[in-house]
Image (cartoon, rainbow, N blue to C red; front, side, top):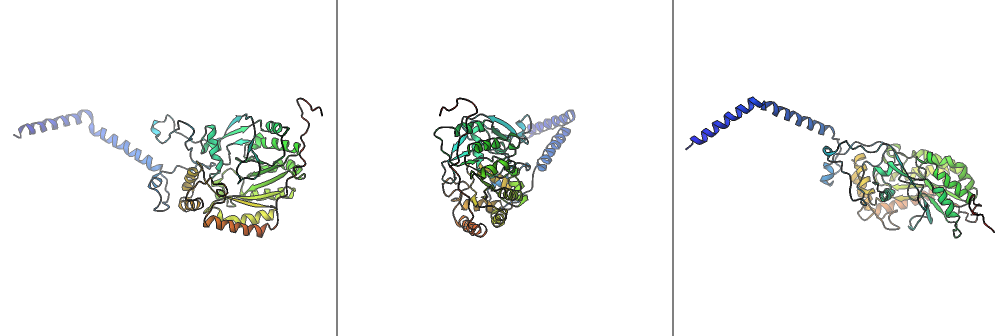
Length: 418
């Protein structure tokens, strides 16, 4: 009964021996194994060691392989745009014709908007209008709330926001036309409500300076807030406007720790340089304040005393602050940056941010989103008030001069009869 089985086995053994000899099967096995070994080595070479913050960290995050840090950029990824039907996927590299590389050079896009002023409806922001000469910001702050607005143009809130900048070339002409309207009444206009008006591209395009020249000709009040020392280029215009009570300037100082500054807001001016800008503006008679923002617990919250003391000694006449909140795509962008840059404290920082916003990173509630709530946020508010009383005393910003507003005669077009 076993004979057919033995015969079948003998035939199978004979076939295998013949196959090994004729096709060099052993060599084929060796080659496949060698290729597989090379792939394992390549994968291991791409891994980066990072510490596990705590046992509460989600398993998915612990298993992620963090990419190499992109120098000079705050965001380390391009998030999906929720307004687009399709998105790019770079995770399956074997299906890509070329390896995906993030943008390292800034691209400029020209826009010709029909209007340049944006009405401010938020009770958290002073002023009635804001003016943004640029969309997107090369400063690359990892926490920036303005990242979400870049998605309206079809770009990502991540690397696109700081590498694909939209320039509004006709901003000064639009501003001139707006201020000439018969029903226009002078009211504070803020540079800028969204992105920094003195970001690096301003050095060549000079749109902010052109708009300042319009405000100066019209004797119209304007407020400015920036993180860049480039504002000193326009010291001549600012001095003229300050002499008529037409300008307020704020320098945002997030940190005096240069290592943190280079990682968190890589293309901004150093913190100590911003303090020096406050000094030079104040000495020129320009009302200048300091803005601490955003306050991030576990990263820069402890620097309030040093920053306010330095700013007050430099001549700042007022101080304010904003507490971090991470709405929309800014949340995952900041979290990815934090876990990659400071993995040892990421969980602590994120949990303290959430503690100020009802257990979430995002917060859209007027009155609370920029101040936070809970023990940490309220404790910081009390500390800030004490520091402001100690270093600034009764100092304050002077009032705007709205009476000086006077539209100049038009240089082109129909002249007025009366």
